[in-house]
Length: 197
Image (cartoon, rainbow, N blue to C red; front, side, top):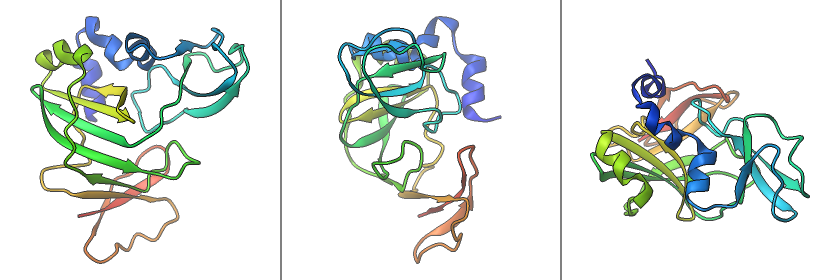
């Protein structure tokens, strides 16, 4: 069973808000709202599904919105856009045990170039302290220091000792560069595997 499927079977229903990116964003004070609510001013916003167990940025897009959001897909929400480094942090029993940085082109929300283990320490969000006491693993995604997503599982792409993960997309040559090995690791958005070291 995929770790995300296990989370949805085991989670206390009272904690399900943490997996809803709209509720999380609202609790964090971001400028955001569901489909059907107007934006505060014209501009570019990120539009994503409120809940997406598949992850991977599926369904996300950057849109210019003047005012009304009635035409956005049901179950989605709009939010202010954050810039900066994208860090994925694992907390085990409330303590940070992993931090990796993701790199991707500006023109995509789903096709990452690579993920690299880094030594950054990211302070635990106060909002999540009760969750971290209750669940063994909490994975947090940050952009420019802003928490954007929470998973109640660890980062499965970085087992002990792995330093780098480079996605291999459908149509790419699977032959790894020197110093890397190829692993099969298919996902819904066209990834067939990865070069790892």
